[in-house]
Length: 456
Image 1 (cartoon, rainbow, N blue to C red):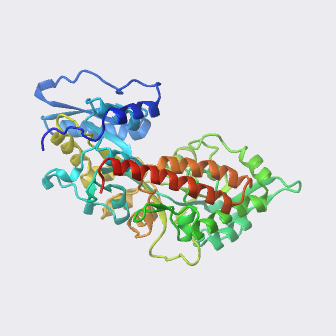
Image 2: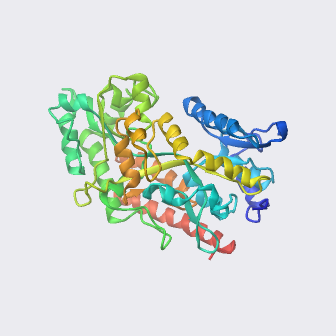
Image 3: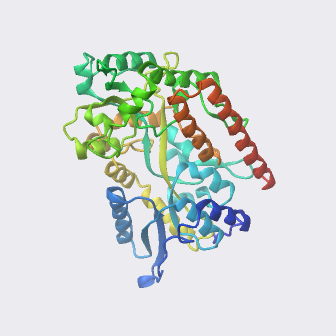
C-alpha cells in the first residue's frame, strides 16, 4: 500500500475543525524529533489514557518495541485528540496511529481522514470476524460507494450492565441472587429498597436514572426501541417505545419528588471514582455501569458485596439468552497521509493478538471484545461480572450509539432534555417530539453534505 493522500479533508474541513476545537490547544498536538534511532521507523501514537489505563497501554507499546528492531512506537498522551487529529490530517502531518472513540468513525470515514483497514494485506490477521458479534457494528461504516468497510480495531471494549449492592438487597428482604430482569421487577425492587424519613427526606433509593447520568439516551432500547434507522436515515426519538421509556423515567421523580431527589443527590460524592460513589455507600442500590466500575470498587471498597446482571428490559422484550445492553469501545485508526501505513498496521495488528487484547482488557477491568474469550481470561478477571459483560457483547441485541456523524449533536440534545424531563419541566412526549424535529434536521444536513461529496 502506498502513502495515502487526503482528497476528502480539504481546507474548508480543516477550518471547520479548527473552529470546532477552539484556540486552546497547539495546532497539531504533541510533537518531537522523529529521528530513527538505529535505523528504525519512528511512529507517533496519540492516545487519551493516563493513570493505570495509560500505564497498561505503555507496557504494550514497550513490548512491541522490544519484539522487533524495525519499528519504534512513541506513546503520546493527547487531550482533545479527535479534533487535533482532523486538523493534523488536513495539515498533512498526522500522527501515525490514533486511539479514538468509536462514535468518531462516521465523520472520519466520510471525510476520508482515516484509511480503511481492509485495504491492507490479510496476512496482518485483522478481520471483523475476530470480534464478538455485537462489537462488529462499532468498526464499520459505508464508504462513498456504499460498501461497508472496516475502519478501526477495538482497543478496549465495555458493555453497560446493572451493578447492584447485595448487602442493600438483603437489608430490604430481597434475594441478592435474584436481581430484577424486567422493568416491572426493577420498579418493585426499587420501592422495597427506598427509605424516606418522616419529614419527607430521601435516605436511600433502589434506582435512579440520573445516577450516574452518563447515558441519557439509552432507555428506549430497553423497551425495544431505537433512536435511529440507518436504512432510511430517519430519527426515531419520538417512537412509541421511546415515549414509553421516558414516561417511565419521569415516574421516578414524580413518585419521589423532583426537589427531594435533587436534594438527595446533592449529598453524593462529586467524583465517580471515590469512596463516596453512591453504590459504594449504599445510597443507591442499583446503577447502570460499565466494567470499569469494578476498579473503583476494588480501589475504594474492596469488601463490597456487589452483583452484576443485564440491565432490565420491558417484560415483552425480555429474553434470557439475548441480553440488551449498550456496547462502547475505544478504537485504533490509521490517519490518511501517514508516511509508513504498513508500519502503523503492523503495530495495530500486534495490539489485536488475543493475548494482548486480553491483557489490556484485564488491566482496564473490561470485558473482551473478541468472539472467543479464553477460559483463563474469564477465570482470572478481577471483575466478577465479566461473564455478563461478555454475554452482552455477544448478544444480537447489544446496541451501539447511532452510527451517524451527527451523533454528538444528538447526544447533546438528549443530555439537555434529560435535565428537563428529570425535573418534570416538560412531559416526555413533548420533549421527545422536539428532539425528533431537531435530530432530523441534523441528519438531513449531514445527508446533504454527503451528497455534495459524491456519496452514493
